[in-house]
Length: 290
Image (tube, rainbow, N blue to C red; front, side, top):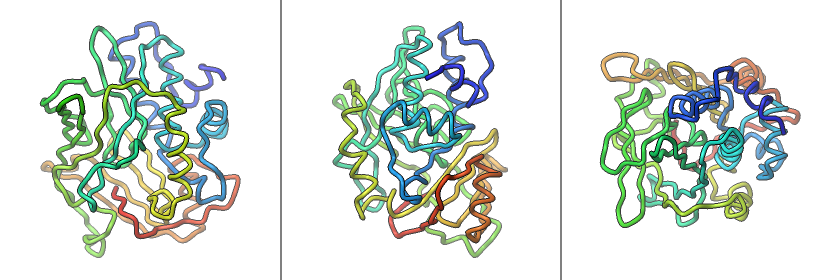
């Protein structure tokens, strides 16, 4: 694996000599704007692999994306390779319908220490829940970013990541009640502890998430990619674009329903993805918002 190939993949050409917050932020932003958060392998009859060599081949050489266990594993490797003090952590994702956090540790995130401060770095949550900057590991403090206001809270060794969202403006009235729309202004995202993890800790859940009929990842095909102003999302055959803070503390969300030929075209034009196998777009009934 070649670190220069990774930086070429994300379009990062700035200095890496200073292992500071500015460099960390710059690398994170380049990755989330170049590497989609997606689960398309599942809906092409292929596996979502955890091995770093396979991930590197998929994302860097084949110009694909991946889900959190893949894109954050790759980011962990890249940051560690250039010298950042980086630790894998495990998260428990909040389910709005169930009103609770997952029992299983299903999310991989990173802790990075630089200039004597600890930060949470996560390139793998996607959609409008994706952080654009590292979050300082401080409890009870609002941390405003372009997508929303993020908020970390610690209680008895457990950390909770929440967000405060803007109102949403949807010009096309027929989509006002879309199941893809987030209804809550204050949204819980996930919980985690600071116990160090390894990629092996996620092997069983990696298998479960891509075979269980109760998994959102088998229920829906999705792909999302951040831009300089917002985020593109494709769920099944529904394409959306969210422009953050369009006007008056409000996000603009535009919807478009695609046919299967248009899905392939938009994957190439918007997400820069060309699939080797045929995608079967799916929009099942599991809860999943953009």
